[in-house]
Length: 224
Image 1 (cartoon, rainbow, N blue to C red):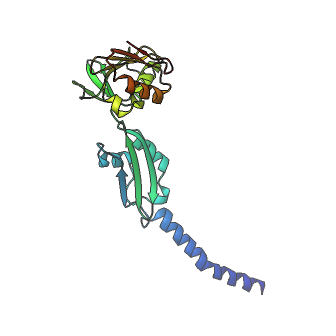
Image 2: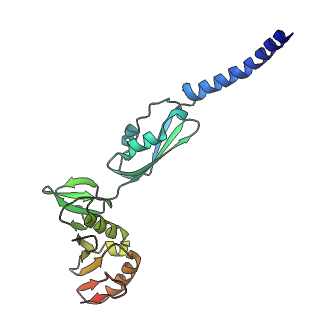
C-alpha cells in the first residue's frame, strides 16, 4: 500500500517537473527568449553598429544569461563613450543607452591639436583645432594633473552665455584658473569653488569697459 502511494505521488509530480524543466530550457538554453535585437540609444556621432560590435552579444543568446555589467564595461571602454547603461527588454531586446563624450577644449600635443572632453580624455588629434573650442594652456596635458582637472571642470561649469566667450583657459595650479576672452579681456577665476556665484558676478561685470576681472574671491571682486 505504501509503495503504491509512492508510485502514484511520483507519477502525479512528473507533469509538474516536466513543465519546470521545459520552462527552464526555454529561458536559459533555447533561442526562444534569445536576443533578437540590440537597440542603441543616446548616440549622436558614434555609429550604433560600433556599439553593437563592442557589446559582443551573439544573436539568440538567451537574454537571461547576458551579463549586463560585462556588456556595459565593453561599451564604456570605447573612447567616445563617457558612460553606458544596459537593460533587458523582454522578450528579446537588449537596450544599450550611451552618453557620448563631448569635446570641451583643445590643447597642443605632439605637434597636433588634441580635442579633449571634460575629463581630459583625448577624443581626437587634428592639425587644426575645431572652431569655437577654447584653447587649454597647461604645462602638460595630463588628466591626472590637478591644474588640468581644475581648468576643465571650471570650463565645464560655465553657462553657455559665458563659455562661448572664452578663447583660452590656463591654469598654473588648481587654484589659479584664468580665462582670456575672445575680445582680449582677462578673467582671473581662481579655483573651481562657487562657480555659480562667479558666473553670475562675471556676467554683470562684463558690461563694464574694463580689461581684467578678478572673481577668484566672489565676495571681494576686482576690476581693472
